Amino acid sequence: MKLHFSKRAKLFKTDALKQLLSVVSKPDIISLAGGMPAPESFPVELIQKLSAKVLNDKKALALQYNKTPGIDEVRETLANWLNKQYGWKLSAENVMITTGSTQAFDLIAKIFLDFNDKIVLEDPSYMGALWCFDTYKLNYITVKSEADGIDINELEDKLKSNKKIKFLYIVSNFQNPTGRVIELSKRRQLIDLANKYDFLIIEDDPYCHLRFEGKAVPPMKTFDTEGRIIYLSTFSKILAPGLRVAYIAADKEIISWLANAKESADLSSNTISQYIVNEYIKGEYVEDQIKKIVKIYKPRYKTMLKSLSKYFPKNSYWTEPEGGMFTWVELDEAIDTEKLYSKAIEHNVAFVPGVHFYAHKDVKNTMRLNFSNVPEENIEKGIKILGKLLK
Image 1 (spheres, rainbow, N blue to C red):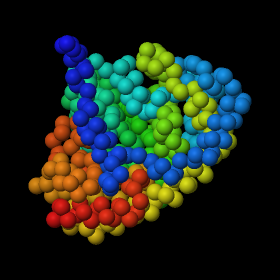
Image 2: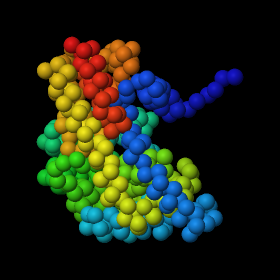
Image 3: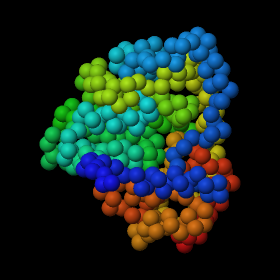
C-alpha cells in the first residue's frame, strides 16, 4: 500500500527528538540532554491530597468534558494569581488553558501563520518551538543573542528592511537553551519596537520561578499597552509535567481565536489536572514547592559550573545563568558537536548539540547542557568525560 502524505506532514522534525528520548531513557546514560524536571521534586503526596479533594468536592464534574478555553473557575484563579504577582488586570477571558506549552505554539501558528510568512527569532531559540514553526516553511529573520538578551540594534535594523513581520518569538527568563535573561530596559525597548513596527511578541516564560540568585525581572507583558504580548507559561516546571497544564494570557480576541483552533485539536484539556492546579494555587502551595525545587537545582547548577571550569578547554565559553535548567557552551569553531555527540554516546554521556536550536542550522560548535535532572556526582563525571573528548 502506498501512503500519500501531505507536503506539510513531510516537514515534521522527529528524528532528533526520537534519538534524544531513546538515549535518555537508558539507565546507564548520564543524560545532560533532556530538559526534564527532577522527579524527586514532584510533590507526590500533595498531588494525592489535592486529587482526593478534587474528586470529593467536584465528583463526576472532575471527570467530565469542560469548556475548550479551560474551566471558568480555573481561568479566574489563574488570572487573579497573575494579577497578584505582576500587577496585571486580567480577567478569566484573558486566560486559556493548554495541554502543555507545545500546544500553545501549535495553536498560535495555526491562527497567525501562512506558508512563507516572516517571524523573528533570537538565535539560538527553543528547539520545540522551531519544530512547530518549521512546518509552515517560514522565512526566519534571526537576531543574535547577547549576554543580556536579544540584540536590540540588530533587531531594529532587520525590522526596517523586512515588512509584515507576524511576530517575534522569545523566551524571556533563563532562555532555553542559553539560560540568559532579557534585562529590563531591553524588555521595554522590545515593546516599543512591537508598537512601532506593528508585530506581536510571543513571550514564552516557563522558567520564571526557577531563580537561584539575583532579582526577578517583570515579564514583558507587564509593559504591554496595546495587547501585543501573548504570554505563555506552564506548571510543568513548578508542579509536574505529567499533568500537562500550561496557559496563555492574552487579549480577549486572541484568546477567542485560539479557543476556536483548540476545539478542533483536543476539544478541551485534562479536566482533573486543571482542578488540581486550581487547588494548588488557592491552597497557597506554590511558593513552598518552588523553594523545594530551587534547593535541588542550585547545587547541581554550581557543580556544573565548577566542573566546566575544571575539565573543559580554556578557550571554551559557557553561560552562568541565575536560574533555570540549562547552561550553554560555545566551543572552538573547529569542533562539530554533532560529531562530539556520537563519541559521547559511546562513553554513555548525552547532551544536545546546539545546531538544533538555530533556525538556519548554521552553527556547529555549541551545546546545551541540562543540570536539573542529574545528581551532582553524575554531572561532574559527565562533564569530565566530555572534557577529555574535547581535548
